Image (cartoon, rainbow, N blue to C red; front, top):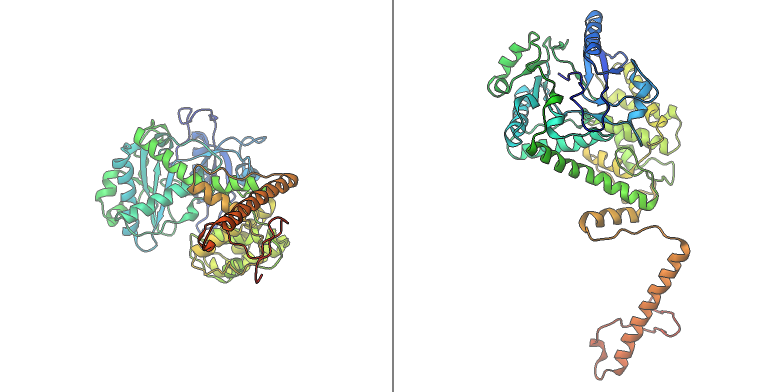
Length: 476
């Protein structure tokens, strides 16, 4: 599936030795600790042997990570996780991936997988070895597209960027006739663990197996399930990361990447102008005026949220609790009660552990904080009617909103910069001088003009003592 990376599988200025997460899942769905170790063939074989001996299922991160700083060898993922999250984080690399699930409707998942493979193979002219597809052994399909063929470069924000590109592509394919299957945005997490090829799914008893493009296009769901009753190995000897760049594909990726990064760049630019702090997802951290719970968070805590959107809700709740100065225990308790309603597939202890891990990750990361825009987006995305007009919890930032809109719509507009108070007073005085000069000119024109002076252009001031520099409006 995700082969070890060789020296050929690297782009300019990228270290040869990559790392990857190795996860082991028990038959009851619980996880052991995730290991973080070099992405080599020997380590992969060792992981396979460990999973077989423990009667566990092996999972691998779809991302490969640049080597951690100050740590070498095999360690737990949580030991190094902070090096790959937040500001100044280490880069990672990955194929463009799609995890297509359709509970109870495998035909629909098959249709979307076919549409994706057709797009990359025919529209972008990628060879079969650059577009790999697996039946997951349960509810859907995994489609991975070669990062070297697309021209993907390692980046600290690569998974976030891929999320925007992948979701946008699936949306456009649906508009052109692909199955109306909602793509799960939660699969674009760091790290994203996918079942290794030829590993069995204990619930279905089926193996994750690779399919050729011909099999994907021509076989029925029943035939694919028959193939998945036994492991079949890889259909390609070369790594997906060794396919050379393909011009139409690299042009497409560069264009999509620019569009994906643009909103985050807008937010970061305007945050620089206003001196605000920015979260890893590009949303500006807001200043809370009180410890009151905003409407968006209150509604999230009482909502029943569908799978695929739950992680984002939990993150927003934890960020608000941290920003409001609530103790870690309070955030954990809020998330624990929420998980009991929304994560019914977990046991009570597993739900509590999940809540604690999210709360600790947010509270320990200096880059995390509450964002009004992010919470509003998540609340509306899950169908909540949020009343932001009456919110008095968050300080408004008019300059940020102005800069974002103007930079997006007017490429010639020069954004405002921060200035000293003395300079601001000087500019105000100059503006008033120009305004009074305009008023005086209009007044003289009215006095000198014969006939009805109301038709002349210019401000008509009632009781305006322009010479004295004061304006007295009627009925003020």
